[in-house]
Length: 375
Length: 183
Image: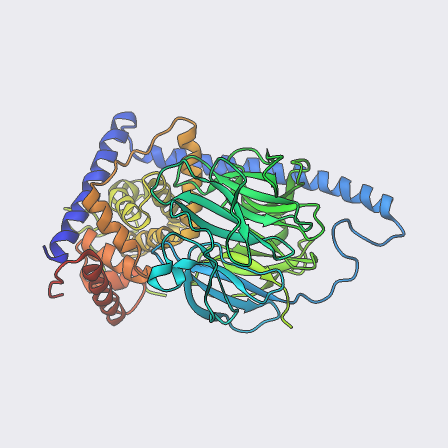
């Protein structure tokens, strides 16, 4: 068969699908334009509701800030934000989707400068080691014989020196490791059955030195996003049952697998990302709703204090994928102002002093991780 | 930025060319164009649940600026460019899908049926191309658009579209293990 023939058949498939849609909606709504009217009305209603909610939230925030100011008067600090801010430093690692499920890796200095292409595409979730000396990737970036089963591996920040951490020998378990313990000794991984079944799905830990010493922490598949700063707990993102949905819930589990608890409502967290603040008090994550778009929320590790953090009103854009700077004074996020693809921004942890880090209208950055300054 | 005032064209599969005039109502424009626009959104987003919302987003943008958009000779090209850009934005798609899936959880179901395995595989391959190639391929095949029309919709030069089509077709033929026809 030729490409043209196949393309025309596939086009007919789309036309038939639209016809079926038209037939089914026509029987419910004889005037098709009513469907548009309903969509527009829903958008307008949601905007009104959103405006009311934002106004309410601002009033509450103002009351809290005034109260806090009264309590803290004389100390000159805002809770959670270091009093003396040093300029943001370090490098943000991010991925760019390649269309085949992998992400090409780039780094960019928060102080400015061009993005650096590491020349490597890996499974989503690459991250800096705690000392910024290496980057955690998967074995799929190595030679063909390392690609299955999936195992952790490291590369140098310039993309060189692929090192397989393959000491777990069980071929039935695939491991996509996504975060380091703060002391650099352990990796937390999303584990899955290489034969496709659900039975081995779970969160696992392995030694960072060689990938051995595997321990299973949960009986359900989830994505370990970040360790607590003291290394005692891990925050997990568990996606909704629908594989197409980017929504899910955050859980926290002790590093030994005990104490599992859900800390956000189901479906509340958005887009497989969460970042634990360096002071250990808050976990930042993205939330999407129809009224307000994408906003950053925080929640305490025990599930209390779920609240808006950096809103569309504060930032002037939708925001996702938060990652704290190593000193906790700043936060990086993916911001979208409409139109082209989103870019990487940084702001002070109170949402002020927003600065654009990347300016790539055709590139959709993913998986931002703020690493420490080198050297 | 391309002009949308360079003439009119057929916009829906099987329809005759329609000269859109500034006197046309938004409702007439919507009823005529919606099937083709939602088809383009479905092909480029691959989302049964999100394609209709992507199309509605594009028409909402047209509705907001209808006084201006209606003045173009070809508002159909304008709304196609909007939906093509919305559909290939992973970010936007994720937002729309989330909204749509929320509604599904509340009992709604997508009106678009699933594609056959072969057709789904073809459009998946198209979506794996760089975004401009994917848009050019979808417009070219879905609506039988010649290069000049694709260029007008995408707001780019004909030579650029030729390059996108050439490279996109080559990549698709390789990926799907098909013979590439002469363009």
